[in-house]
Length: 157
Image (cartoon, rainbow, N blue to C red; front, side, top):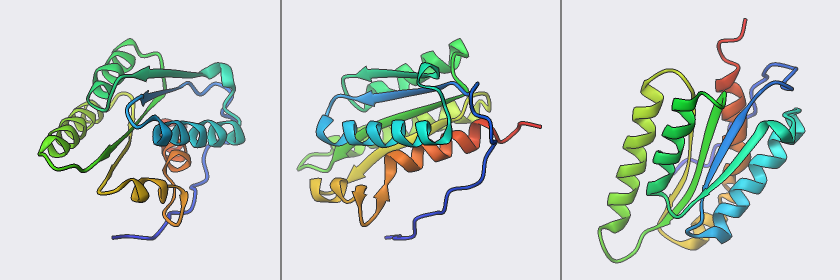
């Protein structure tokens, strides 16, 4: 398990025109709401106007891909972030959900048009999830926002 938290990468100084869509699963909302809050704080600190951020809610993790695909197809964002949290249980459901979201986000990213940032926490315990929203493993919501900014501005001249 890696405990290395990457340093933020310098990005474009003017992000006033950057459009970001954040799609958050309602399942495990006590975790996903914290991911969203961290991303919103990071985007605001970077200078992305609140008016340029679209926040959507979906029922669960699997639905993240459908909503992200819709945003990508519309071209209404320069980057999309998806947030969900899947905690391993006693059945194979965990594996199916994680695989579905991973494959869906990978397929969207392979198009090469709009970056979709993978903010799905896949953990064995709820404690591990809390460690990733401001604990010893950093704040994955903030890190996702940093990745969205970096990827959305990667090809800027």
